[in-house]
Image (cartoon, rainbow, N blue to C red; front, side):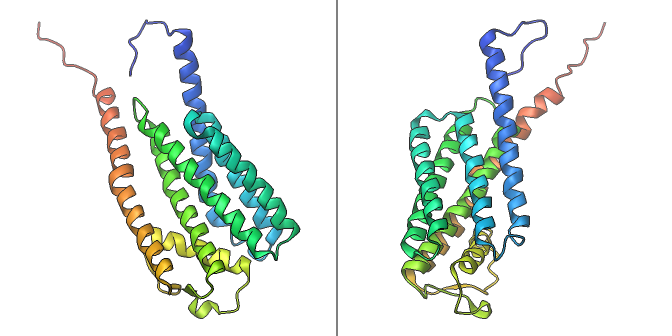
Length: 248
């Protein structure tokens, strides 16, 4: 809420303003790294270690953001899941051919990302005023939804081989190639583009694909659109706060 000129801010208001500014910068940092990751993934293609290192930076940045917004309801759960995720990554680097370790890692990763999504939504919906902070947080949640479904797709394919047909990409794919292709497939499905080069074959894979498309569309329509609309409408009074002078 705008403060009148000449009114001194209390100590609690100053701390709140500083915290809000820091949180906003962290949401922007997280969003920028998410977008950067789309561009650097081809660089890490074929390198298991570099890909794992990039993922750890990504998850650490998400956890750092969760600490900054201090969602007490889920912070303890997010902290535990982040620890389990980190331990699973170390185990995977030590035994990269162990499928059950990869499945376990994907499970902990999905759970951690879901806790991050819920925590961010609680924070955004609890804001008294929608700022750029809220809008950027909403976009981060949208990208996290795609990451969650990517992990689910990989586990489905690992546990039930043949759940996806990779077409021209081949049939004898290693785990790293599967990660890259299903990462691409997840966001194509989230955006409802549907190129058709990767096709869900099993009933579970088809159900998850439809669910991701629905979640992505509903989220964009009801959440992001509302956040952007509220952000724009709340800025308009400040831009047009000049009242006409009364005639003499």
